[in-house]
Image (cartoon, rainbow, N blue to C red):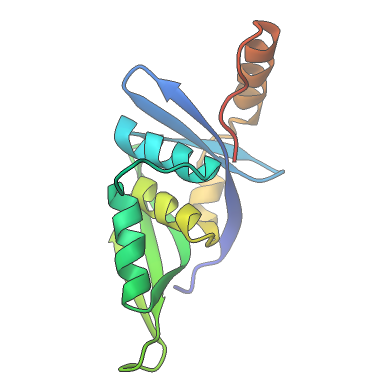
Length: 158
């Protein structure tokens, strides 16, 4: 992966009618990726350190990776086409059979983000994508402000 990248974090996870909005960004800019309800809930639970009685898919994947001596090295959101985002999951593996091996996999950004959060791995956005996405910092600020004014719970935060 030779592209220059921008480090980002999950800034907030907000429920929608048909899924969740994942606000990603840094002090400079925030953008939104819309995800399905199930992955959105998984991301929220991972951020809060919560788990269910039985492992969810992302937890099972992390357990499997750990058993194989693999871990998420980083996630890169590397492309956006017609408001559909693409991501790469970079996994490193080292065990008694292999010296260090790096594997790069294509994945949905939501799944990659969930795995990155579960293993405390960094999330990056390709510079070209970063420059293309619209800044939603003000939208997130207004949502938080309105929720607090209405006496509601603040949005889920990372």
